[in-house]
Length: 472
Figure: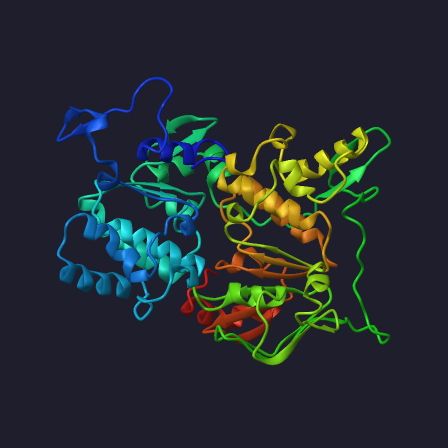
């Protein structure tokens, strides 16, 4: 465990041999005796499942992905075909063997990559935030496979989840590149300081507001003057005071099996939950107009979405995806967040913008760094800052807290709590992330909203949520 940017993923890359130490050496023993590190065939002996499963899939199909490593180990092709069917079934991908990995959800891709590497029976396995996209049921299945593999595979789990950390034999904490062995997790979390930094954290519902004084720009808890780009939106209402519809799916059906007949009004916060692969991300894609319905129609801010007006209407929405590293395009963090704005800004304007970055936990020292040089959690904060700086009318969040440490999660949640006038659709596997903020909850299964309940009544449906794999 450790804060974002502390060096956890760097440690993983060092062990896997993707980078080499500039001083000292990594020592290896085989059967208790020293062994030359450079004589190890690392791809066979050391498995690494990274934060971004999309980058690790190389097969054209699920079956090819699962069988590729086994064939390279020299196994008989008939045996591999049978093994692939067995592996697909044990991770809930039976029947999807001929699908491309690109058609899978984030959680399904994580399961695919993890089991494809685990099937090679490496001596050591590194999981770098590799269980973050899984619903509770899928995570339990993968954990069972990991525990079964312990007899022949040592494991290093990199995680921000204290519930996962408690399952380990030892807890290692890394701070500014320095690794400390904390011993048994149960004993470590009994320490108040360790527990406050890495243990379970209450949701932060206190708004953090960016304000401007006469002498400086700073972050405070009480607003004096909200500066751009965080201006006052206000909630669009009808003459009778009712909130105007912002998103209207009118008996829509999509090729991807998604079927919706729902209305979201201005300023509403919808928490969207459900098992991996149920259609949650696809629902957000439909709201962005990435796909158009085969039947029915979708209205955004009262306008029918079509190919002719997509570009204009998309300016009213912003989407933050699960894997921020896949779509950041700026040459620096500053350029990414303020992309499209005039570059010849005054020093005062730059200071105001740097203060905005600071609000998202992005220090001045990070502003000129290239996004690809950041940790997964740091990239997620950059993606959030880039999406929110213009306060869109509709904000679409797909697992926005993935990869964030406890302090940064609390900070982002505090900001979300402050945006009452913003229409938000928030996808998550963890109900605890949205209960303090949501107006309604949608449970998605097989592309359909099977439950739509007001937040005040969510406990009445707790068993249904849990049966679907949602953490409560």
